[in-house]
Image: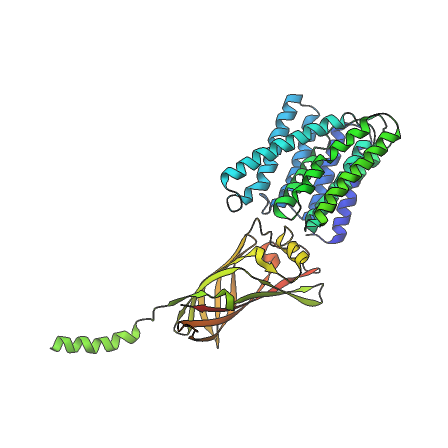
Length: 262
Length: 186
């Protein structure tokens, strides 16, 4: 692990990159900034990558880099290729996180069942995020993600891992940059494509939290479902639906934190 | 007659030269402890223990000759539930990914009144050769009449050598002293 000052520098740099690259509103550039920000921040928090990672939490950094590459490909690839790649990457991330638990904790059958179930659930969550991200305009979408990112970091710390909490802080930091970059663009939508690094890191963190630490499954489920609260923000124009969305998100994320704390 | 006398004479010569067969002892976990200490914030030593372990050791008379131990990482106990949860998690032992720690001796050498026992320690998924200082603390008869033996081993390791680097060296020291006090019966 690097010293604290290096970690803070990494966080600042990740936020700066996300802000600078998202400023123009170009999806591919945003994906590049988010991916690079995640990768730099995660290395600052967790140290240089060993390949293959010796511990399951190392998968988070690989997931972030894979997300950055995916974000770039999505800018030029047809939709069917995009979703095909997402499907493969989600399966790879879930598989890499679960692999060390087989066969000591899970039998091959149980692991295969969990792998396919969790991959399908994660894929569904990503599809949902994409639909949602195409509707929420301006900074509302990054703000919602920022709240989920901060909530995830808190839940991970409550679940007994400061390291995973730090990795969660990296995604929150990148999202801070994205929020700042999105504030002036009121009508912009971005879907979940440019957020591929965030989505995959988030998936890796939640899986690590519940399988290798003491994050309750209820907290993970609440965080995974938290984006549903964002539909409140799509109910109309103006600040009131957005405020209601923020309140709904606060309730769901707060409940996830409470479950992790008790 | 001559042949029988020669055989008897030779047997007197040969018997003392044959090495004693090693007796294997099973660790009595009720009367054994594995404790460790590590420095906190460069100030005081924090102590902990492992509550779940198994093992065997071999003795040739009063001389130890082999050690084989397995410790459950999730049994770490520092008398503080939250700290134990943190230690079992991904920041330190990562007990779900690396559920056991093992030590298997390879070489035992006499060093003064004690023994230097070199072997492979597997901790946090990393295997390294380490040397423990072992002192035989006694042998005798147990309450049921069986032979028992005891020893105390002290081992100094650097946790970062085993990939356990979180918070090292300032929040939690790198150097860890492990003390194994064991009683075993045949």
